[in-house]
Length: 362
Image 1 (cartoon, rainbow, N blue to C red):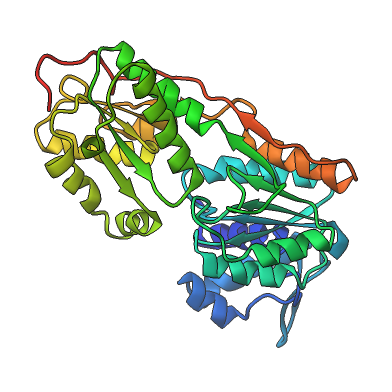
Image 2 (tube, helix red, strand yellow):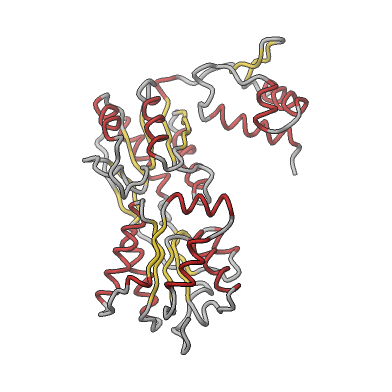
């Protein structure tokens, strides 16, 4: 493991590259950094000395640390994601940065926490900046968005904008690079039906467009197979439920689903690998076998699939990664060309969590 001062230097280097300190040009004082990062002053001092040796900052005795050269304002692109540290975003963020740096743009990273209040604060700040473009993940895209006025102000100022996964609800003409969530869910459901399952549960996210589209694909696949959709097999959750799961480690809404709604289902389609991972753990702890008693499938084909007690049958994102394509589209728009939305397909990777319908159902 790298020394703590090198880890801190790496964090600060990334923040500098993302434009976090551009406005003031000055880094927080040693005492502030020590308290923020929960490391000793000596660790902070050595990290800053390392950045100074690299030529990124200028250490002024008794007066703090300053950026040696601020990025040009007219070459900055705002990158706004819900949770940049989420399990699917490191690769997405790397793709975004690589394309922007290759085209001499400097990214500025913001997080909304998938909250409309924080989204508004970010947009208000961006309206004060001289931006080349905006790459943004919409907030609670299945719900009416109260911040459309600010998006329209950015559009009126001529800021090229591309959205990832889904645009804000109600923003007309938005350019978006999205996954075919309805088609992917249809594919997964038809796969389970092909294994003989005719009572298939579903767990979907209610406040994001991906969740509602995945529900529609699931419902359409059942309809086309002549299977009646049974709402008692469904469980909806929202962003607060997910945050509660991450903060407490207690998947209470999945416990309730297992206890009250899953009876009779021999398979479950999950909103993503994060939910599928938790569901499989609960099933195993309840004495159920996966897939002998219950098959589980999901989206993302992430490290959750590999680290699950039972590797998860899941849909990986297209080889044409949405982060890279969205950034390339934005670079094209910033050069004056019109933008074009695209929808990316999924592929099915079969793992151990799915199998034929059992003789005995859960």
